[in-house]
Image (cartoon, rainbow, N blue to C red; front, side, top):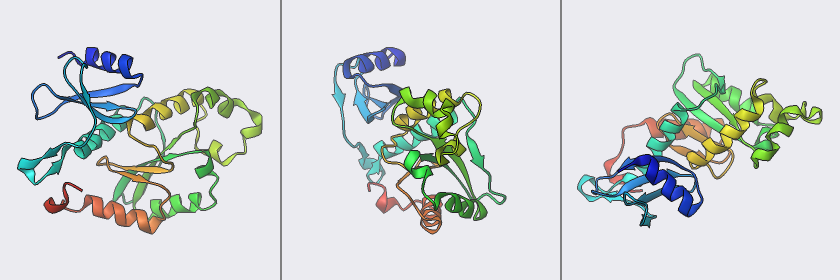
Length: 215
């Protein structure tokens, strides 16, 4: 099986980017990481499946969710630019935060990030806009210099960073902003108070409960 040929075949036929190809426990069936989520395909891309794969030999482990976690970890590890990072002094957790224009305007966002940072959470910030065509405007329009969103944009390679963040958010399955991605690849959707997010991150890092692996 040629991974690049399979990526090309699926991208051409479905009109969506394919970021990753990985094997599954089923011979001849491959997991595809796409901008529309996880798909499964044969080696040539002639047959495509969408759904959840469970490993019945391992307490119904959800292999689709595991695949998405791996996909998110891989995506964040391959970021070409250096995101803005709020580094916690005594780091307990590390998360990637994807924020949109309206999220940046939230009055409580700066205090939320400061609270998380003081509580041991390091935060990588990835600004995301709706359309790549607007990237150059966001970076160069003088009327936007005082916009809260501007504070999270880099000064160098600004428009390139915004465009990359759009593709990265699609790869990671981010469909609702803001979104938080843990270092383990778990996705937390929507605005979270510092207390809520800390509880979620502590739960994610806790030892797995085999009985809940299919949820």
